[in-house]
Amino acid sequence: MDSYKTFEYDVLVIGAGGAGLRASIEASAAGISVGLVCKSLLGKAHTVMAEGGIAAALSNVDDRDDWKTHFADTMRGGQYVNNYRMAELHAQEAPERVHELEAWGAVFDRTGDQKILQRNFGGHKYPRLAHVGDRTGLEMIRTLQDHGIHQGIDVHMECTIIRLLKEGDRVTAAFGYDRERGKFRLFKARAIVLATGGYGRAYKITSNSWEYTGDGHSLAYDAGADLIDMEYLQFHPTGMVWPPSVRGILVTEGVRGEGGVLRNSEGNRFMFDDIPDLYKDQTADNPEEGWIYTQGDKEARRPPELLTRDHVARCIIREIREGRGSPHGGVFLDIAWIREKLPNAPEHIKRKLPSMYHQFKELANLDITEEPMEVGPTTHYAMGGIRVDGDTQMSTVQGLFAAGECAGGMHGANRLGGNSLSDLLVFGKRAGEYAAEFAKENGATGVDDSAIADTIQWALAPIERQEAEGSGESPYQIQYDLQDTMQELVGIVRTQEEMDQAVEKIAALKQRADQAAAPGNREFYPGWDTALDLHNLLTISEAVARAAARRQESRGAHFREDYPDKDEEWGKTSLVVKKGGDGTMEVSREPVMDIPAELQAIIEENR
Image (cartoon, rainbow, N blue to C red; front, side, top):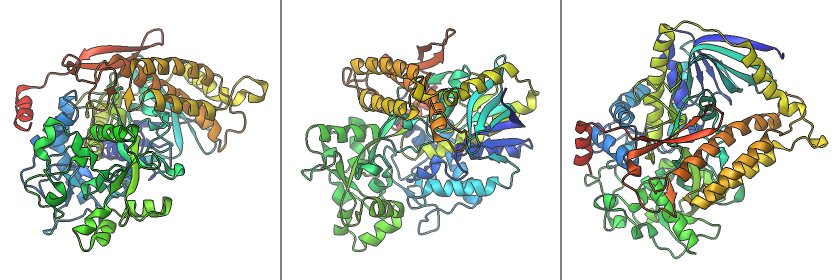
């Protein structure tokens, strides 16, 4: 059997984004040993791409805001299929987590009286997003890393985990390899926290970076954990569409939060054509006159461009399909129009949106202070994920916790912008806290040597195959075909026939992946990395396709062209994905948790 190096911790955290770092900090504060494994380099986590801000009811810009309104907004955005307990805890604890981040050195934009400044964002009733220009995620990661390095956390960079090992019903270890040298690593732990993000790389057009291959989702599923809400995948309305080399790169909602408007090729602001009844009372009749650039809008009036992301994305697709799109298959996002209202508009835009200004200047040779941007929907965020307890973040497998994007339930059918960063802080902290508690209460366990041997054999198989002998094909081609399948058949607008086709194609791709060949040296070998990532991508793609085919209604980010309306009975149902006894994937219906009367009253008060 190939040799491997062993490490042992009380708590092992897999993933070094906002949730993983916050979990590591909290677990370490309990006085136990903590290991942190990340697939890329420390500081390269996808959290840095979250630009708009952190949603928290600080009430610094509008004193009417409070956790109850934030909770109600989150539930409405999620179409009321959220895990209500997670939404409640998130709204209650987000302000404390933001102030904690500030105490650790985070630098936020400020109001005139030096409070943390907050901006408007889609689906939020009041200005709620604490921000640092359009670089909020970067500042969060910087702060958490600077604070975390003093906590005695062992960090293992450029290490990919390929399997979780169990003893009975309890997780006991994680097995992976060093991406630089290809050497295997065994991490024994009393508790494990998954904080691996999403799976956007299953799609052709995505804002997600290369690491987002559904690792945590797949690891948990293979270990016997439940997945929930996998049909709900958010397509952010605004990604770059031109030039082709940068297609899908995120254009932050902060552009619209600062006054950017969407127009079609005819120059019309098409978002006025389709405003849901729930939001009509929040929309100004003439936002070009009513928009207030100071953050003091006491009427909470807002333009229709700040409706929820699922709705805006579908409206953009409608314009493109009906022939009113931009030259390169998108629509126009215009922030330059505010020059008519603000004499210092170019400086204002550069100060508020520095990353967007430089992104378009360098990648598209376009000055956003003078010209509109071309944008279109891009695969962005997974609402579905590992099923966890709302308080502790423990999965259905003993000793296995999850936080952040790889955990499901918090956002329901659609996540509101800005809720992702506060989600990372709130539930990263809770996952670390309860993982440490579990580790203290439960002793060390053994690791099955035969399971390690099987894992090594599986991992080395692609290297040992020879493509030239016809025993396999390039893993890159298989990944490309999967991305094409998911983009075309399980995208923004879905039908039964297309999703059934997707399930069949994914089954065929799995057979091809089982024979993928990546012959060569294990050191610095992206081909081998891709061959191993395929298992995760295919597992999660099947879960998404099967769950989406099962839900016969349209709700939030899940839109069925053949079932375009919401269904009351489906609104009482969650779909749970689990691994059957024979290894096949099972999708079952379970009732959504009943919302307690006191929380239901809060929702009714804020409709």
